[in-house]
Image (tube, rainbow over all chains, first blue to last red; front, side):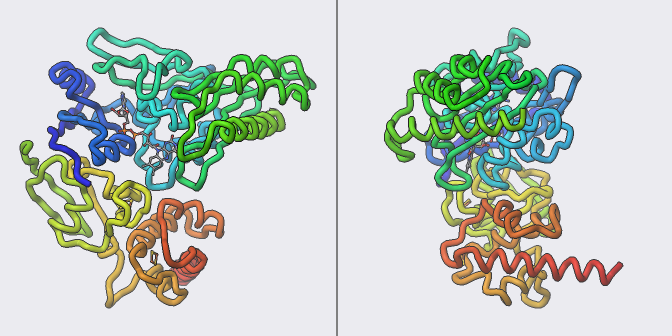
Amino acid sequence: MIPAVFEYYRPKDMAGVLSLLEEHGDDARVMAGGHSLIPLMKLRMADVPHLIDLQDVGGLSGIDIGSDSIRIGAMVTQSDIIDHAGLASAAPILREAALQIADPQVRYMGTVGGNVANGDPGNDMPGLMQCLNATFAVIGPDGERDIPAREFYEAAYMTAREDEEVLTAVTIPLPRGGYAYEKQKRKIGDYATAAAAVQIVRDGDTCASASIAMTNLSDTPIYSEEAGTALVGTSVDDAALKAAATAMLGDIDPTEDNRGPVAFKNHVAGVILRRAIERAWSRA
Amino acid sequence: MSKKMHIKLNVNGKDEEFLAEPRELLIYTLRERLNITGPHIGCDTSHCGACTVTINGKSVKSCTMFAAQADGAEITTIEGIGGADELHPLQTAFKEHHGLQCGFCTPGMITRATKLLEENPDPTEEEIRFGMAGNICRCTGYQNIVKSIRAAAAEMNAAKEAAE
Ligand SMILES: Cc1cc2nc3c(=O)[nH]c(=O)nc-3n(C[C@H](O)[C@H](O)[C@H](O)COP(=O)(O)OP(=O)(O)OC[C@H]3O[C@@H](n4cnc5c(N)ncnc54)[C@H](O)[C@@H]3O)c2cc1C
Ligand code: FES
Ligand code: FES
């Protein structure tokens, strides 16, 4: 498969990227690792007359762990996340999730920025970032702005980022408590049938706070505030687990596809969420 | 047709320079332009790993990268790993442990395995299966591929110890 004709650019700085985006409007797209975009271009499902490769733009590959937040540059790859010892101790859920994305070859290329900007409901990092209450920094012709991950996703491939804006970094408050990223897939390297990101804070025997987000069960990732609330103040016993699952099922809206019918997806979502909560609680 | 680009690559230690359309995928550059036919096209959809090459120290599916993206890069294919007169320990191990049947996946398997062993010189069976998950084989059932990689790791570690 060969993509349609396009012009290729490799600007050295963000100013170069932004001026190309301004010049070519809708006809231009940035490319990070290319491991979502190139397959779509080969299938001619994405038409990109002007392709702007971000690989030479400086300042997008840092991982900075601060005292209350972590900043991850847009061009940090999934394998960078897996290999970063500081990140593995400061926010272990990132590594646990990254290890469940795709396969080694894809993880060397796939970036955090591409994964969260793509807008494909199958991507794992959008739900993860909603669970962690991340903020996405974007830069455009009118300067920089921050968009909360929980407000970023509008529909499949539709996000709050404007076409002429570039995502530069993801910032997450330093996560606290126990964590789990649990994913059901048909085979290694597959997108989720259902996945759950859970972060739980424990106070003695009770749950003090819980954050829950689900992947590939709607046309956007689903942050289920009510599922988290259902756990707060409980000892995360069977009744609380059931209440959280019921609340989550009220928020998702899966559709039938080659991963199964709706009833099956709801079932798997419940099983995966229960496992994720139990594991996060055991680590809290 | 879009403007052709001037692209420079170093493939298996040799400098290559040519003009290509930006949409030329690296696998076609290797196979059709440079006649380096070790990397295969299995799926053409980024799943099978038959097209795996090493680019600047990373295992990459060359069907999912444009030659233009690789401009300036150092690339190693199976041809740069070992040949008939001097097999790499992985190639010897695949031969001795029946790590291949039809051989279609083998160049990608071995190229990926060189990188895996560089990152983890003494992997467990589980680590091999996880680290090789981007390479699909339709013949062997993987048992003998895992066995071959373990045997090659042992061989390479023994050689390293002997040299020290
Ligand atoms: C075989 C296979 C299996 C996979 N399995 C999974 C999986 O299980 N889970 C998962 O989450 N992903 C999976 N992926 C996708 C992979 O993780 C992608 O690499 C990732 O989704 C996109 O990252 P990228 O850097 O390759 O982005 P690209 O493909 O370069 O870009 C994707 C989109 O985001 C836009 N974009 C990229 N960077 C920016 C930026 N900085 N600012 C604004 N827009 C930007 C591009 O314009 C494009 O529209 C898989 C891919 C393959 C090929
Ligand atoms: S041909 Fe590239 S992954 Fe199958
Ligand atoms: S040996 Fe035939 S595909 Fe692997």
